[in-house]
Image 1 (cartoon, rainbow, N blue to C red):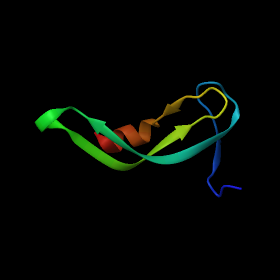
Image 2: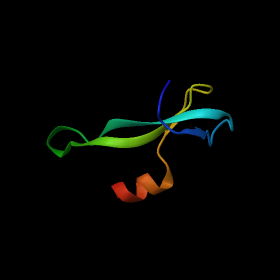
Image 3: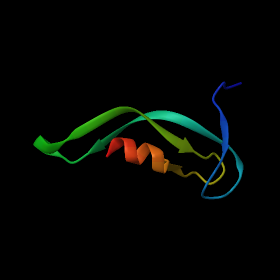
Image 4: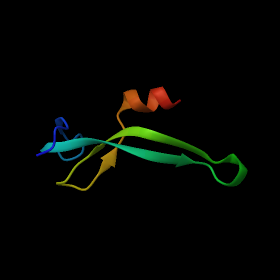
Length: 60
């Protein structure tokens, strides 16, 4: 069983979403930026993955 915290999905409202750490890339070519270890909420019920507002503000 996972030690990751279970949260409620903001999209479908069901409990069971997990916070995963992923790499995100922005731009392309010479202007490509890759950020690793970004926390995203991933929902097994509706299939959505999204960043919280706090995470987006930190990446800004």
